[in-house]
Image 1 (tube, rainbow, N blue to C red):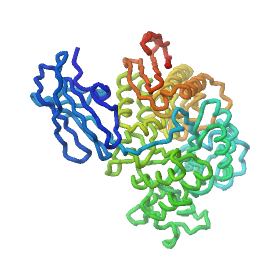
Image 2 (spheres, one colour; image 1 turned 180 degrees about the horizontal axis):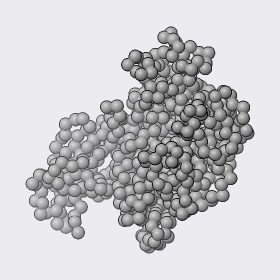
Image 3 (cartoon, rainbow, N blue to C red; image 1 turned 30 degrees about the vertical axis):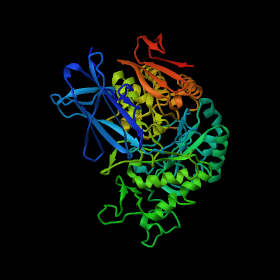
Image 4 (cartoon, rainbow, N blue to C red; image 1 turned 180 degrees about the vertical axis):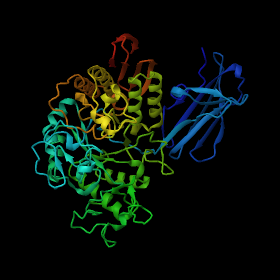
Length: 604
C-alpha cells in the first residue's frame, strides 16, 4: 500500500480545508517515507504574479516509518496563491493530483491553488437550504390571452405547444426572436402555489425589462417592465405575493450592452428620445463607442449590430445603474431580492464592486449572482485575472462546473472524475460563495437536462436537425431515470439547487430556442417532481445542506457516495447510475442502493 505524503483535501495534511479568509492561519503536514531520507522539505508558495518564497518545514517525530514535517502561517492579502513542495532529495517535488493527493515527480507539475478572500466577505444567510426556480418569463404561464401585441412587429403564438421560431427557418420572415407565447408576471403570480408545493424559495427571472425580442437581453428601457409581461405595479404585486409565500425574486441585470432599438441608442427610431445613434448631443452618446474602425460604426456585443456595447467605465452610465435612485435601487425598492449579472466576465471588476455596493445598500441579505461558466476564482478574461469572487464583488456565480461533472458522470463517466471536478471547485471557492452558489442542470443557455442525458449530441448539427429531434420512448425512460439522479446530486451538493422551469416534468429541447418552449401544463409526467419535493424538504429539515462541508466517501465506476457535515448534522448521499444494485457504507451501516437509484441518510 502506497504511503500518502500529502493531500490538500484531507484535514490531517492541510487545515482548514479549501480557501482562507485574509489573515487566517493555514497549516501543512507532510508524511514522508523514511527511505526518502528527507531532511528539510520546502514549501514553495507565491501570490499570483509574485516571485515564490521557499519556506523550510519543521521536522517532527518519526512514526510508523514516516518522517513528519509541518509548517503554519497566516496568508494575506486576498488573492490567489499557488504552492507545491520540494523534498530536496533527488529533487523530488510534490504537485497536485486527483482529489488533492500529491504525486512525486522530478518535473514541473500543476501546483495547488489556495484562494485567500477578504476577511469580511459574507453572503445572504436566508437563501441557504432553499431552492431556486428559473423562469423564462414569456414561456411559463399566460394569465390571459395576449392576442393584441403592444408593438406591431411582435407575433403572438396562441398554439402554446408548438416549437419556437428558429434561425434560419424564420429569418427571412423577420420573425426571429419576435414570437411571443404570452407568459406574464400575473401568470407567475397565479402559479405561486404550484412553486410553493415544489419547495421553491427563490425565483430567478430572465430579463423582464422592455426589449424588442422574446428573450429581452437587448434592453430598451431599464426602468419599465415589458408591456407583454405587465406593468411595474404588476412586478411589485408579484414580489409582495411571493414574499408572503416565503419566495424571493431575483432579476436578470444586463449591463454590458443595450438594444440598438432602445430609448438610449434608438437606431430604429422607435422612441421619441434623442438616442446615441441619432446625435452626438444625445445624453446617452458617451455610453457607447462610435468609431469608423467598427463595421457598424460602433462597438457591438460579439458583433451583433442590435446589441451596442456600453462603456461600463463611463461615470454617467454607472450612476444611472448604481447611483442613489438608479436602476438597482429602483427595482430593489419594488421588491426584488437581488440581481443576476449577465456575462459577468465582460464587466470590469470595479464596476461589479460598485454594483455590489448598490445592491447591499438595500441590505446585506440582498443577493448578487454572476454568470461565469468556468472556475470563477482563477478566471482570466480580456487579459485580466478576475477578482470578483474574492469578497468585494459577486456573492456567487452560476455553477457550470458542477453541472458538467454531474452530466459526464450520469452519461457513463467514472465517479472518480466527477468527484475530482466537484472537489476542485469546493477547494477553490470561498465558503461564503460556495454556500450560495447557483447549482443547476439546465438553463436558457444550455440543452435541456433530459436531452443532454439521454439524447444524441447536437454538436455539429444545425437548427433544422435540432428542431426535429425528440427522445425515443427508450431514450426518454432512460432520461427520466438519470434526470432524477441529476437533481438528487444538484440538491445535495454545496450551494443552492436551481430547477429550470419544465425540467420537473421532463421537458425536452436542444439549444436556444428549443430549450425555451412554453411550459407544458398538460403534462402527465410525474416522476421527477416528487424527487425534487423530497430533496427540497430534506434541505429544509437538515442543516448539513445549509453550510456543511463536502467529503467524498466512495467513488468507483458508476457509484458516487459523499457526505455533508455540519456542526449539528451529517448527511450521507449515494448515487448509483448503473443497472445493478450497489452495496455501500452510509453513516457506518451497510446499505443497498437500487439500480438507477439513490439513498440519503441523515443524523441526528
